[in-house]
Amino acid sequence: MNLAERMSRLGTETAFEVLARAGQLEAQGRDIIHLEIGQPDFQTPDYIIEAAHQALKDGYTGYGPSAGLPQARERYAQYLNDTRGTDYDASEIVITPGAKPILFFGILALVDEGDEVIVPNPGFPIYESVTEFVGAKAVPAPLREEREFRLDPDELASLVTDKTKLIILNSPHNPTGSMLTMEDLEAIAAIAIEHQIMVLSDEPYSKMVYDGEFHSIAEVDGMRDLTILLEGFSKTYAMTGWRLGYAAMPADLATQIAKLQTNCTSCTASFIQIAGMAAYDGPQEESEAMMDSFKQRRDVIVAGLNELPGVSCLSPAGAFYVFPNVTGTGIDGKQLASDCLEKAGVAVLSGTAFGKYGAGYLRLSSANSLENINEALERIRTLLEG
Image (cartoon, rainbow, N blue to C red):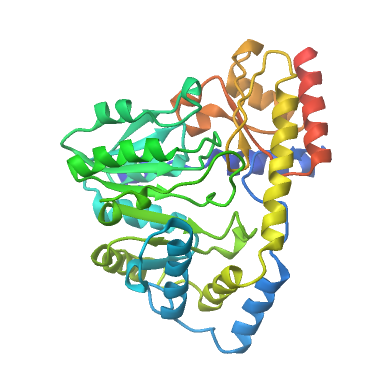
């Protein structure tokens, strides 16, 4: 088959590849502890499921507007305004089947062949993948342990050229769990404003914060018209399979993003958009309890990793990942990740799955039970001491 050349530039998510291999081992009778996938191990709260059921009964089963239902766009805008201190309205919201389409559509709408996109590295692999797919260049902005894996604004400024069309931020961050401070964001905003560069701020972990205070670059004066603010429901409300995300952006760009959606998915399922409204309007106790549980797990897994031979791990400020430094083991990170799965029955990811600056690290998801986390730590200890 003669595939288009661009397909050779399209990457993937290693997490799903490792998940598939883990499934093969389980089919052979192996007991595998899953710390590779970023998915809450909780069920979607009942009140959200009931709202979706009621929406189906109420007839929300047909096509809807490509940008989203008017009432959902309005409610989602209000949520952002309540949580970020912004002043978005419905015309600036586009709702998509999950958050990833905004990444794809945003890059398609803003970036031409030969342009440059600055992406965090290590970082969510889709940023680089889609950038390279459209024929642009992904420029890695290193996230270093000595800076708690927060982007260095001075280093960012050195990466900007006349070809830079987009800067991608992710805070709290996947895979490191780092979180940008308001001081960081103001410095980054100054660069974006000076050069008039759009910023895509990927914020699906905004409620998953354990230390410090979450801030969005959209809060910074002068950034309203230079920001695509991306949010979703997967993490906060355990709705990964529902595929519901959205973004706020300048209204004229929202029109173009909606046009891309028309050509790709047509629209987001209407009854799911209604369920998203219910998620925001309903009781928040279950979601808050999930966040408390993730914090407890973070504390346990960080403490346990720091007791392993040759391993050190910073405590992440947010998200549900840890990013331990494994250079002290003397084992290459990619090999160690493989050994953890094949020999110890613990599915983890190599740091290089998130870019070259992830070398020497592993990523583990703490979205699993305390019992399984403790068992995984013991298995890894046995592997390292063997």
